View 1 (cartoon, rainbow, N blue to C red):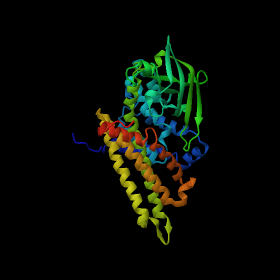
View 2 (view 1 turned 90 degrees about the vertical axis):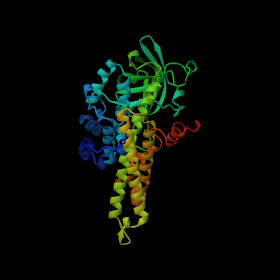
View 3 (view 1 turned 90 degrees about the horizontal axis):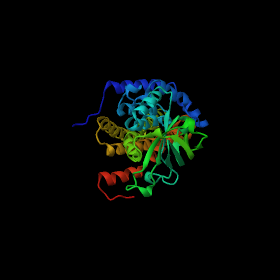
View 4 (view 1 turned 45 degrees about the vertical axis):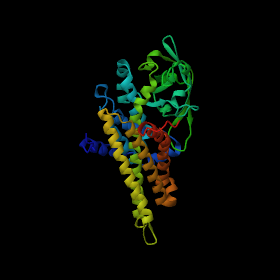
Amino acid sequence: MIWRVPRDDLHQDLRVAVRALCRAYPDAYWRELDARREYPSAFVKALTDAGYLAALIPEEYGGSGLGLGEASVILEEINRSGANSGACHAQMYTMGTLLRHGSEAQKREYLPKIASGQLRLQAFGVSEPTTGSDTTQLKTTAVRKGDRYVIRGQKIWISRAEHSDLLLLIARTTPLAEVKKRTEGLSVLLVDMRAAVGKGLTIRPIRTMMNHATTELFFDDLEVPADSLVGEEGKGFRYLIDGLNAERILIAAECVGDGRWFVDRATRYAKERVVFGRPIGQNQGIQFPIARAHVNVEAADLMRIRAADMFDRGDACGAEANMAKLLAADASWEAANVAVQTHGGFGFAEDYDIERKFRETKLYQVAPISTNMILAYMGEHVLGLPRSY
C-alpha cells in the first residue's frame, strides 16, 4: 500500500476551529499562569466544552469518534498557538485504556461523563522514584481483600493529579517473585481520587522548571472497590504498552506545533530586528539556522502523519511512533534554541514568551520517554542489535 499524506477538509476545519479558540487565550494568559504556577482551568474548560478532549471517544459514548490523526492535529494547533497541551493531553491517550480494556459497565459509567467534562481523566500513575523507566520493577502494590483492593506505595511525576477526578493506576497485584515473566502480575485500576484523597491517598505538588502541575502520590492502605480493576488482573503491562504508541504520536504532534511556533517567532523577529542598518534575517548566520529548523520540523511532521495514519488503520506502528516522537522532540528543541539565539537577550525576557516555550519543549527530550530509551528500542527491536539494558 502506498502511504499518502492526508489533506482532507476535516483536518483543515479542525485547524481553523482550534486556532480560533486559542486566540481567546493569548500569550499574556499563559505568561501570567506561568508566573503564578497555576493550572489553565479556563482554557481546559473551553477545550472540553468544544468537544476537543472527547475527540477519541466513540459517538455512542458522547464523543466525536475521530481518529488519532485528528486528535494529533488538535494538539499540534494548541501548541502552535503558543499554548501548552500538557495541561490536558493525557485525557486523549489514557482514555484509550478504558475504551479498549474496560468492562462495558465501566465504559457506560465513565466515558459519557469524561466526554461531557463532568469527569476529568487526566492522571496516569506509572512512574516511581526508585524504578524510573523499568516499569516491571515498580513497588506499588494492590492486594485483593474480599471486594476491595488495598493499595500501598508511591508514584512520582504524576501530572495533573490535583486537576483530575480519575486516576489510571498501574500497581503490582502479584509479587514479582511469583510470576514467570517480569511483565506479568501488573494490573490497571481506575481510582476515583475525589473519594481517595485524605483516605489513603496524599497528593504532594512538585515545583519544576515549567508550569506542568506535576505531583507525587502516596498510597497508605488506600481501599478501592474490586470493580475498579480495568481488564484482567495481571495483564496491566500489556495494557500500558498498548497505549504508548498513541501517546508518542500525540506528543510528536505537540512538538511539531512547538517547532512551528518557534520558527514563526524567529522568522518574524529576524525580519523586524534591524542592526547595522539591515534586518538580521539578511545575515546567513541567522537565516540558515532558522531555515534548517524549519526543514527538520517539516520532516518530523511527515513521520508523525505516517505513524498516526498507520495507527488509525490498525497497523503495527511501534517503530514509527517512536521515530515520530524522537524526530519531533529533537526538531522542536533545535527550533527552540534557534529562536533564543535569534532573539538574543530578548529571548530570555518573559515578555517575549520564548523562554517559557523553551522550558516547556525541553521536557520532551526526557518525557514521556527519553531520547535514549527510544534509541535503545530502535536498536533492539528494529535493527536487531543486542539488548542494551
